[in-house]
Amino acid sequence: MIPGDTMVLKMELLSPIRRGLVEMRGTAFVGNKVVAEADMVAQIVKREG
Image (cartoon, rainbow, N blue to C red; front, side):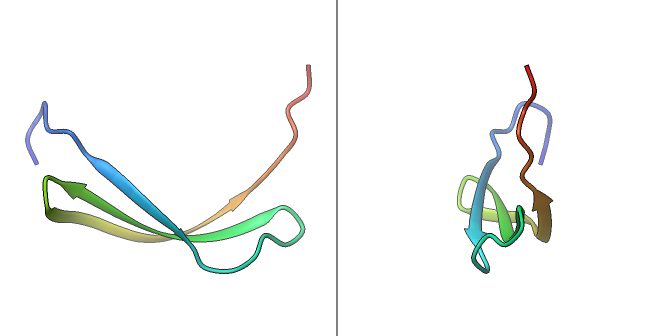
């Protein structure tokens, strides 16, 4: 990767959302080339306001 490249992130849900937690697998592409991969956990929270 170099500055100015466009990175596309593809996310895949690994399991159903439980208690506001979601497990995902992400793959980052520049063109057709895989430049990064990661397994992630995120918490879904309601915004106040």
